[in-house]
Image (tube, rainbow, N blue to C red; front, side, top):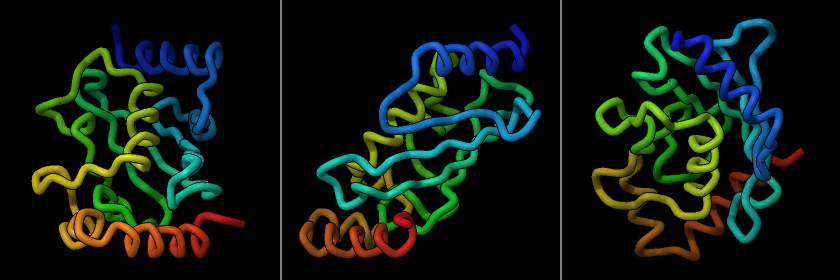
Length: 151
């Protein structure tokens, strides 16, 4: 199946079975460029925030993962705007059958459960704060969410 056919399959799935916590779709007429809106999960420092993400599908999709760019400031050990680190986005661990819905659900879940192991994060200082000073992390992440992702 050609990349465009894979992408259209994902789009049809998302139209038929919308997900909670995020919305996504192509930008204008370019099927290879999408924008997603992630809602900050309840009971997280990101609750009430609206986060924008761009998704670019490469020409060799689905054999290579899409490029995901975070468009807003956020305090998170796995997000160094615009870069996002998640094992689903690494070519070596990417699985051909992964859907856009699964990818966005994983990113949404990552907001609830940051990956703080040394090999899993971009921002080691933020990861240390998550582990050693969780209340400080929640307070600072909440403040940044209020400043950049709310109204």
